[in-house]
Length: 311
Image (cartoon, rainbow, N blue to C red; front, side, top):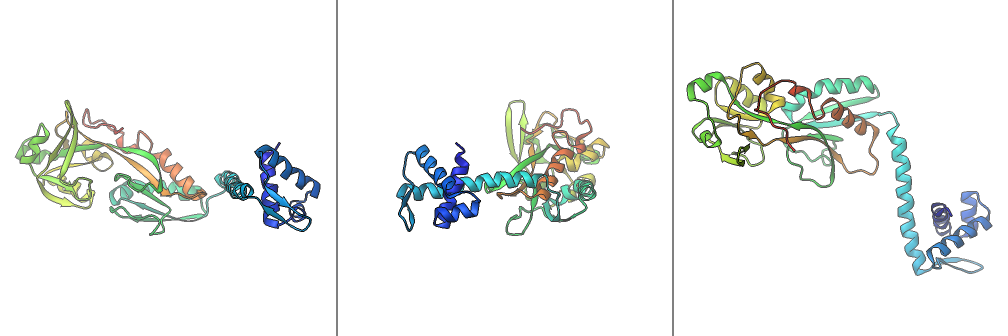
């Protein structure tokens, strides 16, 4: 027996208020409608409808089955629609939020590729280092590197975010090279003000995780500003390789404390938990994951033992 079909027929009998109405709506014979309801009752082992010559009414069990049948049928339709949407061509406006440094350095090329692939989509990039409320601000997707706290959002990991701790050769010549986390208390540190646990840096060392409170001569809410300060010899900076990697590869910054690796994070694409994920969001998130992935392009360089992959 096709239980879904029988549920559909039963739901239509209730909504139309009669077997004849359901038969007309579904283009079935009244006998076929009656048979579906009878078979559903037999399968469930309970009477669903009270029938008289003039009207029908739900039994107590029937009322419960009707409500649950509606939810089941809605979920089935949701599966069908989602499958269809996954093949639909993305259209409309896509609003994307991302941290300033990451967006400015790495999203331009991907967005250009996306626009070329989907000419019916326009993209608005909103760069902001604060954690924005996606729903309240009408965003479709947000790139997040901060810890995920909103359980109402769907998150897809698109890349690791490895970190390094480094300083300019000029600073090291002038102030010396720290070899362990406790040494940082005697150095000028450049601290990202929006980092979780501000003022405390965490490392994986030979004997496990170590956290140290740093003496920050400078704090800022933007990583590029801290990188530029480090390049100018202002102090020691801890930050992601997507921001500092090129400077380390070029020798403008040198990794310090190679035995103590900064605790890494992950980069996520997050979006509202909607029953139907639009084609424009799905295609954009998929492109981000494909272009970045577990070996993102900004890490195509060698910094010896100074980089560690987050779990």
